[in-house]
Image (tube, rainbow, N blue to C red; front, top):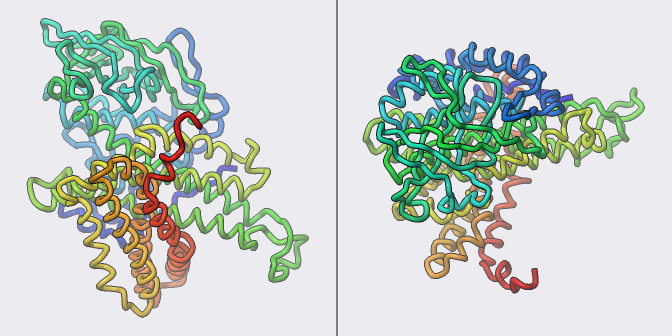
Length: 597
């Protein structure tokens, strides 16, 4: 069974106690977003998602999407669920009220995303891509394009995609061949083929708005010659209703390892009418608004899968009777003890729990910075938020998806043979989660982005947005009688991150391959330390609240302290080993001659 109950108490803890949601009300447009309002939204979302989307997860995986003659049908129940989703306004949570959105803060929106990803990742890709298209058009589209397309995308009657990849180019988009020819009326004729297009064709909405990267006839070579176009499946009429077909055809859908209920399409554009988004040859700048949003959302996918894998495995471990505790029978009235008494099962469950709660805390920290970045005018606080989001985006995308996949595998391992078969649903989590480490820029590309772009940007200014608050917290609370030893242990691994950062900065000046060789291990090191910072902060709050807490709340805070202790003592020490790996340099990777592979 796939078991999921939205972790609302932990979500409230992260939003209100750890990251002070009341401070969000000081931002323009969020004045009415009180903790009570945010809690109500999460509670209602959990009801809808667990009752409507979760029951379709396994059945949608088993059925998959159906393709015939250019038409894609989603699995049974998806169309009705999507209609209920848009009628409930769930796709409009963080969108601008000027276009029909609800103007919710990013933290609440990301937590709702987490629930959706946990309960039905394949379903979540349809509205998820739409929000990314909304952001790109809102940031770079003309007022005409925004007025036409944004209300439809926000209400969900039209959905969106991003069309980057071609059969011969993925990460290296400078090689793309799709062309856009200017027309006398200011539009363009777009011709080319794109692959791996999530939600590229389906039966959920009346129109699909494709954001397409293409090259103009006078385009300079490489990525500096890419422009972005909005190309709808059906041309809108003057009143915004759906008009004639636009030469956009789905040539097939991919047969995939996972997310089978999400239509991953091959899309052909045959002199399709499109309109330029932003400036000519500046398409990557516009598309990166969408891609960065999607990267944070993909990280949330890893967290969602990790959470449902943990809950499903924990429920099984409490019921499955096998063997006796090494310390003697814990349930002598039963023929065997439940497997949760065994230390190695506890190791797996605690690892999953620590990953999930740490990632949730870090994700909301980044989401709050997104709100400051988007809602503040020109001021130092906005610059700080932009720096922080830029620094943390590759870490969230890569770390959360890596850990989500690890948690899914640990969930299968907890169930043993029952985890490997379809009936219990755990193996679906492994298959669904695997793509998250690949799309929206592979995790290796995220690591290169971190060390090659984010660390040296503005003379390392972005790093200060993380390093300074960490150092200040250690200084302020390192002698705390309750959690001081935990903080001091964390401080040593924070020192390892600082040493690794200095090593990469020094070595990469003379040899860029050194940074590339260290990149993935450095990202994991940075990510573990970032989770460690969340955990010592959460431990401090829990320790302070515990003495006066009522019974139910006291149990929550005790669990938070126990999980913090586990992470700091059993998981975070990996960061020390990662420092040694980083310092090994490129020689062990590059020493073998190419012909020997």
